[in-house]
Image 1 (cartoon, helix red, strand yellow):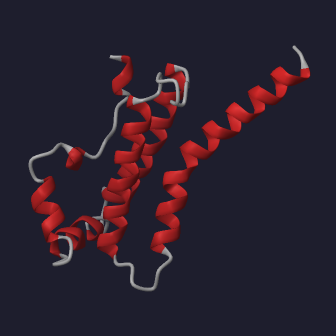
Image 2 (image 1 turned 60 degrees about the horizontal axis):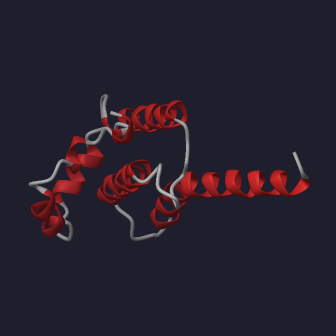
Length: 128
């Protein structure tokens, strides 16, 4: 391999890493606000799931991640495990409850009521 190929491979790997970590970084940054509520935790988690779903649907596009199926599946398993940890178990329903009870989020909830975004768990839809 030539030096140029190594640089190109490194740039591509770095781009993939940034695209994978960016949704989580944005959610963490937003949740650091002093005005963030427990309902916002669930809202930002939904935003992260939606972003990953879009990334994985566009995986094979020219501008997509270009990740192999096993890597996408592994990322999905990790995300789903963290979602399950956040939402199931004793005392964990606080995020979902405050999300639905927040009057500022009511218009969003009504608009999303007909979509499958509340299913939560993501799959790798591009490899079916």
